[in-house]
Length: 141
Image 1 (cartoon, rainbow, N blue to C red):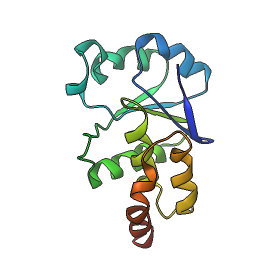
Image 2 (image 1 turned 30 degrees about the vertical axis):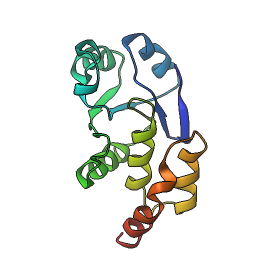
Image 3 (image 1 turned 90 degrees about the vertical axis):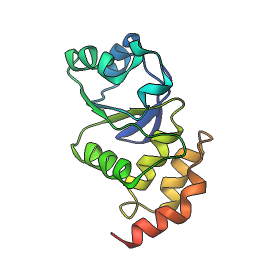
């Protein structure tokens, strides 16, 4: 299980499997956010296929699929709502890139832009490309 923390209460990971759920619980997470669209993966890894095992482990599951190249403000708002539920969050997609970008956009204006950009960039995620959008969102809050 490759968990990459972006903050004390939010981390990203590549695609999870049922076998990863004990490690997610052991790491102290409360919520799992699926940012991966079902069309990218086999049916046994679809969010709703994973839901029973995730919820049986006492975790919340939020499904917020972010289509590559099609990130929307609805995605950003849904990610923020999931984060605002409180607790420690693990978000996953194919690599963690989309989950880091949507996190940075969701938190625009609540933390310094450079902090949000650097958190994902340290793992090679493409957050720096969204610096201007993060700044614009921050000004609107």
